[in-house]
Length: 372
Image 1 (cartoon, rainbow, N blue to C red):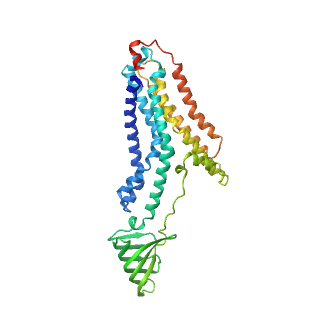
Image 2 (image 1 turned 90 degrees about the horizontal axis):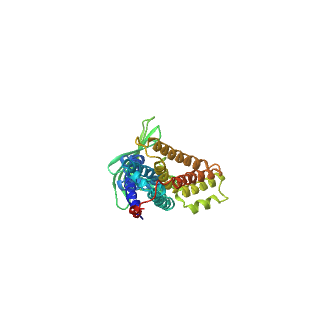
Image 3 (image 1 turned 30 degrees about the vertical axis):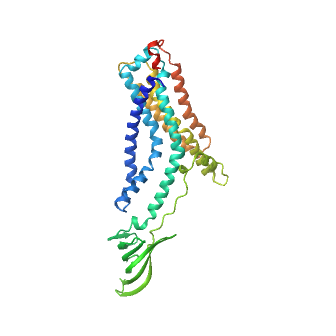
């Protein structure tokens, strides 16, 4: 790799990291708001909160990396123009395609990296997130019941736990059940254990007293018991979600798309996602080229290149919007996949063609040949 390429690549790398980390930090904060309630109200451990929100980052990175690279490349090449460095390069006869090699290199590197993230990173992260979500939703004792405090549930039920033992049992239990409008039931027990069933969690009480107050007749009754079961009713156990589209590899997606036993809508969904996975990495290269092509093929303007920058930004937005639209439409109509490929490779071909056809201003000087 030549010195000129290394010089530009270093600047692009710094800009890309700053933009990518800034955007990912903001999106991480917005995504983490979904889990704040679990921390404040249900006692989700901080380490689980960090792990669950971090597992969302691979998917966010694949969306942001082309945009971050676009911003970094445009900033670097625009600064080269502002500092007259790009003008000097062209004046000594360096072609636009050679100057753009640094942007092309970064686009290819990020495309290769995104291939790994899309096909291995995201499926693993989504699978782990699904397992954690299931674990958190069904961790009834840790997430809802706390030692030394009253916990209220839907249906006018309140539970107090004095202490959780290491073996999973609980000591000192009080259950106030007001689900029936005409009576109030207070159950107190020395010990017990929480059991999980298909219809929801239940608490097995031992050595206690059950007191019932009939609100209509104002009659009070009490009974002692050795064993008693309290059903939490609508506090149901969440079922584990089946493997989603994001958790499958490309080969698995194409395999599901050919599965004749699945409905046509499901098969089209898998096929559209598989083609999106193939095309998504290329947008790193495409956006890197779009960011620098306009600046490299245009003539020098002392007033700046505001129009060219605006056109480049609008082109990037249009391509990104069309990609999202076609990806969604391809889940319903198979032929839309062709438009997905056109939207991806047509800008790539046009950008490379413009760089190659841009005339060189002069012959390269011998003293500068080592740079390129």
